[in-house]
Length: 285
Image (cartoon, rainbow, N blue to C red; front, top):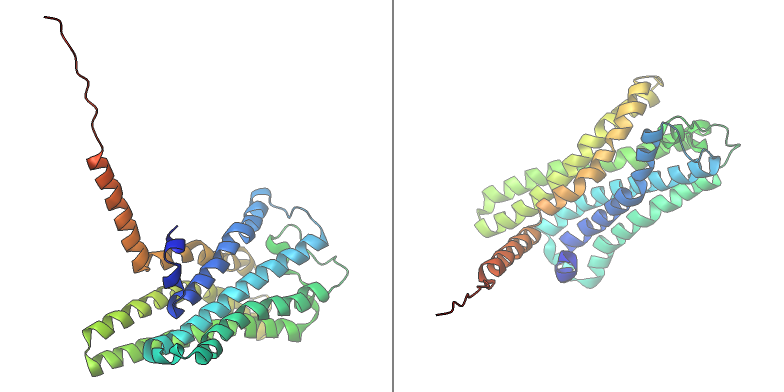
């Protein structure tokens, strides 16, 4: 109801991108997360077929990378929104610098993994039905080292590096501008957008850093480095993002907080104004 009522506010650039990220997260919570939960409940993949494992990993990897790329793009675009917001008032600039990158974040992961997972097929005997996500045993990861390394570096590592550097640079720019101009109103607006971005970005960095660090060591020549811990713990830590992202995002949305307060205030007023029924007893003289 809140999003329907405030759909005009959601069209603002700083809300639009985060709302798309929230929609991707909703798909993860609704359709992707139940699959590993089902696996951990039964301790085996069901149905245990190559087709199921192929489409499961395609669906999971696509959502992972879409979410990462959206977060990295939002982190870069937040600089433009805070310091050069007037640029996005020009329609073609908004399409090129804001809408097009978000569209590419949605199209690229689907295209890449369609070719890397669906079309790059093998005999199907490599799947491990006793491990989550069928042991992450996609053909391109096992038999194509170049494509597997590219996937790890470009699709997972790069977005996190961009995310971290963009946030670090944003903090430095906001603090420097605050000292230079000392404008209270501008600072409050910048602080709100900065805190919102840092809170969400930190969630991604915390969840992905252990997995990416171990993966880097393995690629550099130690393939068994923390392999079991990586499979049993670090890869599952990624699910923290889709579990906590909605709460972090909504808690930092001032319009939602105001709407909830008004809703409770309205409900309290109804309770106070509600008529009280009285029963009159007539007594005979």
